Image 1 (tube, helix red, strand yellow):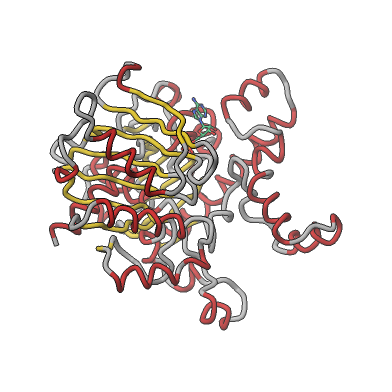
Image 2: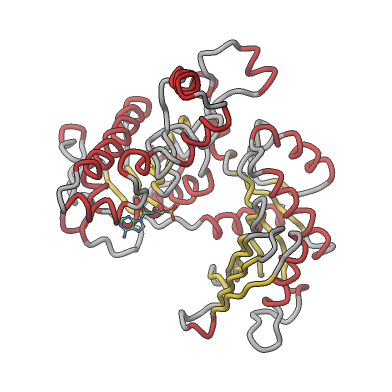
Length: 402
Ligand code: AMP
């Protein structure tokens, strides 16, 4: 069975075609700058990393439709294509950033569903309109093929009101849906399940802290396999310090900066989203660069790193108390998988809380889901490479089989 996973943005479409028997990608790529004078498409067919399997070219894509047409042409190309015909695609899984309170599990697309999805646009005005266009184009290009939406927020829908409500007038929740939703749910869910395999314990019996550290970053507390708390909030701006996002700050800062600088709300939020976090402190949002500069004695790079680790530890500490008992802390995504210093800094000096790292294993993680804690560490520290596309494809298959 072949599943096409689509992540459509306002001016881009990321895609991956997966062979579900093998659990492997057959092809992946991205169409960018849709609607601009000149667009860009990068397509890669698997297996192999050879350049012959990769093509990048420029071409205008006036709308998402032309972009998707080109993707289908590449997938079915008589020479380099990975399928003969688009009818080989059994289902399409769409990554949707925000499902609001409407969607707590992967959902089959139909008219009623799309109507509900449109109601979530005010909650994710930058993402959900693009997702909806992606669904509409896919419905047109693949008539009769079932489409499934998989939401970044749905894994967190098991939180209780005490965890998701903000201390603001309750009417704002009732009227506008202002509450904590949480994001990266597909990744948190995927690594939680993989962790249960490593721990040799059913997921329903696992208490975990999942730490997704990419350019965007969030943590979740998972009790008996279900999310009970998460660090991101109404939007993906909240929580820990990220690449360019500020994470949680005193909300009054917003008004103070806007007043003093004469900025409007849009500009202020833009700075907190794109010019803050690690980049705001030291000018770079890439940990590789930050480590290099730390080694050269750059104080700002050191401060940025220390702040990020400090804030991450605060959340982990809070989640230990919420969970009471923890089987494992799991690191994943770009930083979580590749940065032993970040992991070591976050887990340092916590032996009394049951966390004992193995410096060697941490420095030489073998890319397999495995522990980087000492064998006798009561709380395991695992590193698991996330695979959101596979998770979306698995969810899509599950809905198709319902
Ligand atoms: P993601 O959003 O999951 O793709 O993560 C991207 C981030 O991962 C980059 O901005 C880097 O900060 C970080 N990253 C990627 N590779 C490495 C590495 N080898 N060492 C440290 N950080 C890395």
